[in-house]
Image (tube, rainbow, N blue to C red; front, side, top):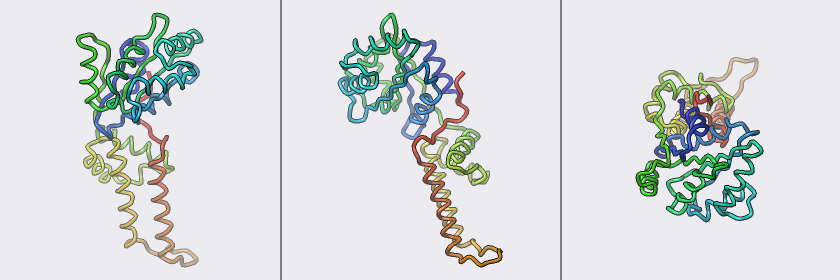
Length: 258
């Protein structure tokens, strides 16, 4: 999906706060990880903020100030540091997870940061559920201060590509699933990445259980007990399933920056 490229484009040319919304499991965190991973580390400093447990202005500004080595967690001090970084050729990407948990004071602070100073401004990205839009509308009144990108579920082909990338990260290939299984995974998950992960993992475990009644002794020069073959099969599937869920493995399908 071209959402990642769209975010890079908007960060370059838009002066608005950028908002990515979608239901739980829609791939917001996946997209945020891909955005950070695809930025040029030499010219962009990415600051990731979590709204969980720190959803007010004090909590958010403290996280941002700490990440940027700013002594005072205040909007003016943070913007001054952003301007100093801009003078050295560095931009600041400020990315907020679980943004629907931000209160009014935090949203106002982030809008002030996004507005920036004449000499420089951070690019602010909010990742949250759709309820976030109503909160921002109340603060923005009729002024256009943010741009919304609403995530859409994957098509079946995108689901296949996503599975292929996740399996590659776990050291396996898409051949682990048949075409019918991929179709079933897509249908059961409605194309949402978080549910795709769960349905695919369940399918791998079910395949392991089914193999218990189908595994035969290998026709080698020695006889391996059936329980050993089953144990090895279980280890392989569990290892793939575990690697599947490891943080940092997530990739968004076909989302290269322009």
